[in-house]
Image (cartoon, rainbow, N blue to C red):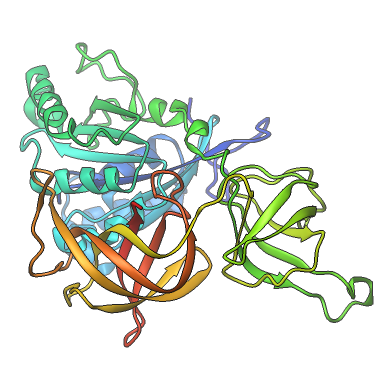
Length: 434
């Protein structure tokens, strides 16, 4: 049951002590109805202020849309509204009685695939829309493939615009069979859920639809509220990238205080446990865990904390703290799948700055092993390098060691970005494979 909206635009949360956060990204081919679906979710979950709704109604009438255009709730850029497409990643949040949500509405045009990577990189779930009239198209496959590469655990395929095919079950079943046949080699998702919907009419989005009596699965909102995500986090491998060293200078009470602040990105740690600082390899024990609200008995993802260590070690920003018995790889070479985001192609011997967790190093491309064909999922020779929006496998040599995991093991310590030092532009996103 959806919550009602309060005056500040957030649903009422009386009686709710804690609500779990689900981040999900919407993607698909252009005009598949992503923004309309997000608007429908917000509208039917009563997460829209009255003045926002009035503005959308006014804009819809001025544009001659004929009926309420819910896509305008998320298409924020003027160019998007004029063209009727999504260009940038639009973020929206809402809450029901069961869960809080952050939505990343990703662009559908192929030239904005890099924006889709940004939107999906932190998602717990990817939602790919497929137009019931068109079936699977290249961009839908591209977005599903990117979600697989990003190791998004859960995938929802919404077959949209069922109203335009008279809610024909055979159309839905054919798309489901087509997608399963295509995605079988990926085997990257813990589950794939298929839902027939009409974002425009609201069928199976928040409420069950009488137009699809042949469908006995959940509505989209019910699935989003109940999908299990707690088990997706890595609570085994303790990982703590140091963001900065805390040394208060203006308070005599903390004259000898030395803490290491950062965000826990893996595992659980408690005071008294032995840890190792990487890449130096020096060991010590956790003396305490501080936060702005006071000390903690344990720290786990995604908490931001300050660690106190028993020994006065040389620890600085970019170092990684882990358990001695469960360390990440420390090396000056790595292999990764890279999504290229620049108009200038990625070439062998190319030099870039590499930002990994809180550490920055320089790197050189030693080899580009293959390019991924997202239509067939085949690996092709990458003799010409990687062009804008292409995905390939590369080998990198680094100027200094990094402490990293595979992306499959830990999404935070297994990812990085490539930066063009001449322009300071982010030109690539990397997912470490070894």
